Length: 132
Image (cartoon, rainbow, N blue to C red; front, side, top):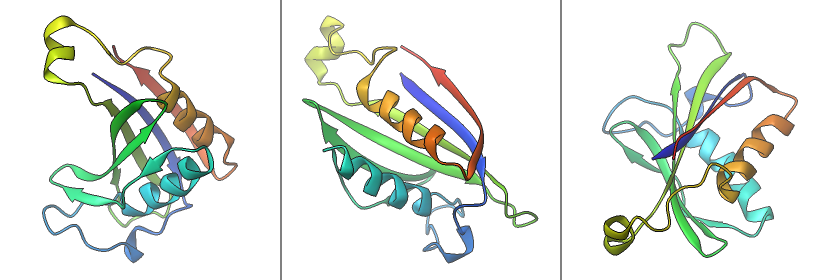
């Protein structure tokens, strides 16, 4: 399951992003910013890469690893873009079989991402969906 953080901002310039060769979906700029913020909190993250649904980074810290995805509904008609960040916890096959290591409602990385997003004064309309 995933935790999803949605918000609106003019902070990121989607026109300056490297084009996603799979699908024309933005996400690189928000993940580059988030990667730098997560590094300050002692997490490690890969460079943003493309997927058919947007962009992603792999994140590790606190003895867990995650896939963090981002996408934007950037139609070009406004600079105020709606962003979605998804946080998925990696689990081994045996974790899944035995129901262990599930994403908790209070997952530390998901909570940190929410705090980072909410703390930025250029970001508005933050909503969070926590799934377990």
